[in-house]
Image (cartoon, rainbow, N blue to C red):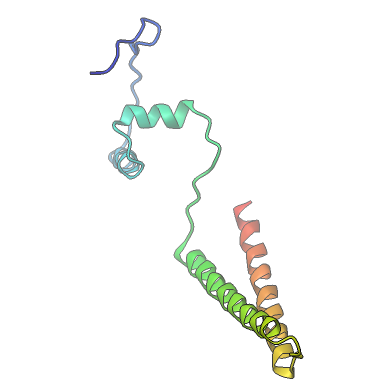
Length: 125
């Protein structure tokens, strides 16, 4: 059982809003997605509380690009770990032409990733 509220805390005022059927369905969907107990709780949270973060919706293309970038960054990390392992395993190991090409390829991947990130971050801001 919920604790009793003081007279100042009791909600006695009703606020009526007219909606289209589509608007109502959208609100009900949001209430369920965000796991609120009621539409009233959802409305109070959304209208009265200051939110520190924003919810951003992005397109499927945007998600695909970021997944590709994540994959590329993982590949770069793997390559760098392999080079670091060789350098640490053998004190006399010298960088070969293949190692230099790997570093150059990593650098190019990083440049491409940063360029794409910059383009998409401008869209968000």
